[in-house]
Image (tube, rainbow, N blue to C red):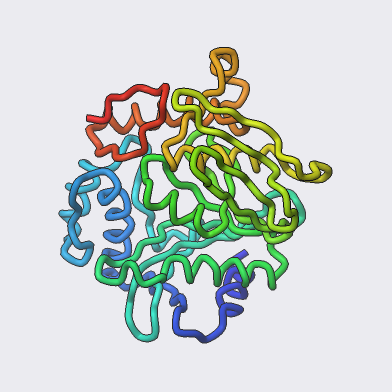
Amino acid sequence: MDESLGGVISALGPSELHLRALVADDSEACRLWRACELCIFLEQRFASAPDPRSLSETDLVVCSDKGLMQGERLSDPRDPSGHRPYWLYAGNRLVGTLALCLWETGWGQATLWLASLYVLPECRHQGHASAVLNALYETASQQGLRGLRLDTDWVWQSAVRLYLGNGFQVCNWKRTLSLQRLCHEPGYHVRFDGDRAEYFRDDIARPILVAENRGDRLDWDEGEGPSGGIDTLHAASTFALWLAVAGWPLIRSPDTWAERNRWIDVGMPEGLAHRIAALEEIAHRHGFLVQTPRIPGLPADRS
């Protein structure tokens, strides 16, 4: 898989935005890379976070104890069995980090897994994250890969919005949010118009799914478009996440809420609502910042 991953990186070609492999025997480079990864957690969980370039090895230990939950740990850039660490450059300017690995999913095509996407504070709002996501997607398509996949957390709203805005769909929400962008499937878009929202697949003119915001509950219906051959399970899951980000209700009725465990992994909006409540409760329990949209019908405590 290492050779194949190298082929993916090479296929990106020379451009203004590009990836450079981290030199694993450079201890200072490894420290900085791990500090950037740690700041991904710190920025999402606290009101302020340090500049990763200011963190010493001792700081990494102290801040990890404060900002990581049990079972979480920083990557070891020298570990050959994990994601391969890369620097993200714009021209000759270092702008951030990314980690990649190829994983055989059993579908006959490898999937390119992404992790540790971080953009340095002064380099944000310049389109670097979206540019590298789209470049990797195009390269994955050209290389015959199944697509891109990554994990994120509902509480990490800036990340969720970034990935949704770049065409990612929900794969599952069993533990956290697993998102994917498949090369062989048409893209999609979601349109909001007042209290009505519609989910479209890019190759079909009519909406596949339609929702209406009733204040304390959600109306949900299949659209008028054809349904044959369409993956409605992941479309519904993705549509539910878009509605959640917009602060819409996710519960259609007391009866559907009572059946929420049917969709504990993926599926209808009640399953996502149930998972959101659990993820927010975990963050609260650890004293982390929770700045997420208010979902009607879920606990209101965001302290």
